[in-house]
Image 1 (cartoon, rainbow, N blue to C red):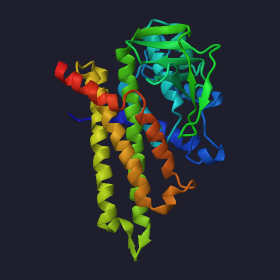
Image 2: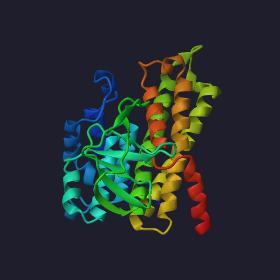
Image 3: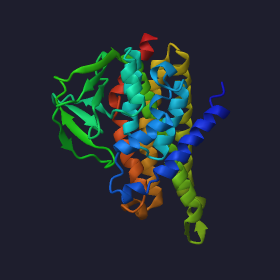
Image 4: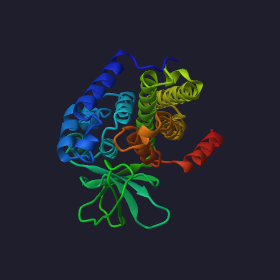
Length: 328
């Protein structure tokens, strides 16, 4: 099975990468102070069709498959694009599945921001990601996927390691439900898209240190010529390749409706969690002291990887995979 992107899929990748490089370079984190998601940016991304790429034309989408959508999220991860795109894409999918066509079309058009809601076992409130510009929150913690209205809901802001992402706590028990459906399909997409962003981080950090190892010299030689540097880079490249191939397999499984699609998506997320964190850490270590400073870009990838690894299953994911394997 050839899992590499074909010509049409490569065009999707190139278009996403070109936009992110031009409109959202990493320098924005310093230039804008935080590089957070704004209503204007949401409108610009809606014009590109990202929010409805995998939806049917009837739902306001563009009729691509979940594979193309996954490849776009991979580029968002590679370029540290706005994490808030994820919530809107998932909400549009949920609204379409629930038969709320008007709501789905409004979300695809960029009419609403959507926060990601994460249950906290230690408190009754839920943690919201990117709620500052959100009209809704999407909750995938139960048997149903629910799109909840945040109208009139007070929030308590929290600090986030990645300053481009806002975090808040809120009691969502009284929220009106705008759309609901069985959780399986939306959770599967959530894990797949989050894994894609983590794979993008794996690729970006590997490329970053590989390029640096060629131009940084010590004792008259590039540091990449030393085993202590080149062997860890090889480990990073190997992790990236293995995780990327699992991501591609999961995306194809989800597109084709395979019986093991849930397991493949969960496996992709579990592998990507570990690989992105290890690669981001190795990138900092191999760069040396400069990478521990705020002026270097390496820390941005570590911070984003830590946030993404905690979404839609981290430690509990391994237990879920064991259950899926035994059930099969």
